[in-house]
Image 1 (cartoon, rainbow over the protein chains, first blue to last red):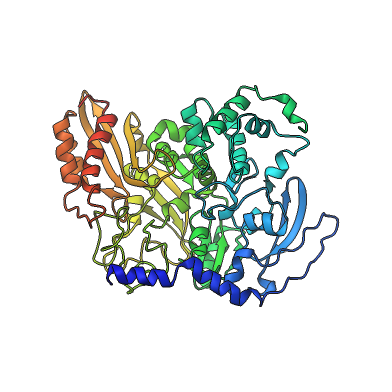
Image 2: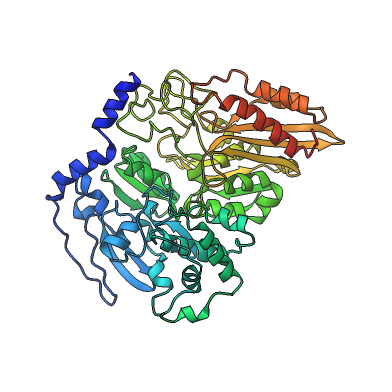
Length: 225
Length: 331
């Protein structure tokens, strides 16, 4: 096939366009699913179809996966479409929208959360895989009333501009300090390389990380500003 | 996203039995590659068998060498003290791959099964023999900057991107598997991946339902610890796939090279080991000329496809540099 032909074909059929078209057709077919309860626990609604699953056929409810997990210290039991990513579960089902959807392919780090003690990309994690695990999101590490030192340091050093990548940056930054990977600017850059900032706030991010590493963050910021 | 069923295997025997029973099933470990490919509509498994929690997570001494559990994370493996001491090149290679988040999730077994980063393989509207047998190869006359210069066929020029597997090949590592009939087998990493030839969709020697359980590093390869180096050349300093990588491992005695391993990554459909090039190093003292001759030999038969022509001289220079650093010479 000639290159021009391939390009025309590509024009006709970008995957994004394809899924948009299919989504429009199939979205109407979907209805929200039953909400079931589990005794003695805080109940999250059973996840309906993952937002990203709308461009494909539905899976029968009996094929859904039941999981028990802890998210920001809250025990939950739910049944979900196995296609649901952890990111989608957090944002679309649990309204924990602090974790951001960026590239959805593990390249940008906006979706970084902790499973147990490790930071991971929630976009490439199937929610089914957090069964029995403890998940921590940006909402679980601090709040406007009580900042985490890293949040305070990001404010102090302008570690962001638009703010979209910031929750992922902060989650990674916390681990970089915790795991002693903040010895030098070079080391910080290497261990933060899984988090992209398109505003280019890298200078402020590195400064914020060093501030927390050295315990020099502005403690007054830990209370509501 | 294509609908699939998910099941969490309780043990290895259940995983392999389910895999051989369920048509079009796949094992799921870290998922950092597989979930992405399902989302892109590149692979469509009907059944995912989660093996990530199975009891293959430890890294332990074995037969005088080291056994890396297939389900241990890349992060944990790279940080392992014994690995860093005895096989530092493996730790180096892992840490030069992906990002910290991905390494936390990615498993050792899964790393061996990384798919090519060929842009056409990743984009379903385009013909690709690896994805759709018989549909043609868009890369040969297309955007092939990242793709192979060695081991290609008329059907496929995809490159295999794993840094870890490239270093493991230099260490003569052996993959351990379990089959659905309960038997086990050992496959040297160097024999694990297949060349595309006429069947680019066949990528490894794994059989239906065969599960990787461990990767063994042999005791003999500890000899290379002092004089080994993993060079990764990429478009940016961190978090990028290699354009060319070189695993160079030597044993030096009285200024002469007595053993040598030279494996190239990201230039072929598999980690590319050239034994003739290695043999040229034996009994020799390190020198710029020697390394240049070795580099010529290692790239013998290399063929570019336009955009990736630069990889041939780049690989040669990479070999010289990696050997210079590994031999700790001024050459």
